[in-house]
Length: 368
Ligand SMILES: Nc1ncnc2c1ncn2[C@@H]1O[C@H](COP(=O)(O)OP(=O)(O)OP(=O)(O)O)[C@@H](O)[C@H]1O
Ligand SMILES: [Mg+2]
Image (cartoon, rainbow, N blue to C red; front, side, top):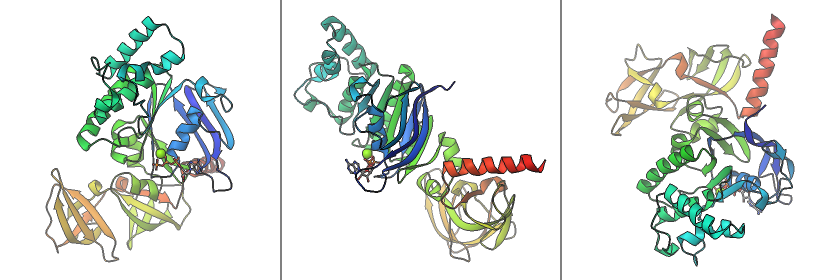
């Protein structure tokens, strides 16, 4: 028995004869967690929200809510509310009436409406703003009205489409805390869309990284940061050093002319791979102790650490985050542990990875 509240099974979305906007996307959303859809502009984030909300239909595949197929269930019959990117508040209604709107449509009794709107506004710290006009509210306050309007309907799932993108950095950080706190207090499932990787890492229980209509990887922020599955994810999430290499055999990989012990296995002997090492996993050391020999090109002080850019003899750039200083022009060594190396198969996605692991395990069982 799964705890999934929403499931996508091989969902494809295509407009006319254009290439698919979503290509056989499968995932599960568990009840009560904070999910983030993360990816560059045009990768299909809003399309996934629209499919969940029922504003558009899947071309192929099935969508389930609480275990029931909902492909044909109209938007107003789904237990879902959306906070749109531009908030889509009603400019001619005051704060109270914006929040009350859904309840009036449901023909709820006036006394109950008063009570529920009061609760919703207090949840988002907007008590006392009932009679304010929308145009008299700041960006952050409008955003809270939009959230109050969503939660007042007591949906099982709230969809939030880049709700913080219009806010300045300080307010945005504040709202990140507030939203996360609100989700914990309400215990409702949140599906949040952003193209900001730091925001995704800070807020989410689970992240789905999307590119070109395909889920590249899903997992906790730490999983995705520490074990990016391919070059796209490694590049999109945090800063990385990425070079091409060759898997010699299990636990041994070659790059920049050297062979290095690693913790990866299950690839083909001599298979070409992408290698990722995070800047904070590189340690500045002597030329002799270094596994890589590089020349320091530039150095920036970043507050907590120095960001040092170096080049190896093949012309690859290596970014190092270090509390130690280096001198521009110096030849230095870079040391890293076997665990710091992440080996990735070219262009592999999560689905490919799962298939490969399955085949590999089956192979293991065969040998025994
Ligand atoms: N009604 C439509 N007709 C044709 N193509 C569409 C339609 N709606 C969206 N698309 C296309 O689908 C793709 C995905 O769009 P979507 O809005 O899901 O992207 P997104 O990830 O939300 O991007 P952004 O970060 O810019 O909001 C885009 O290439 C877009 O042009
Ligand atoms: Mg969008």
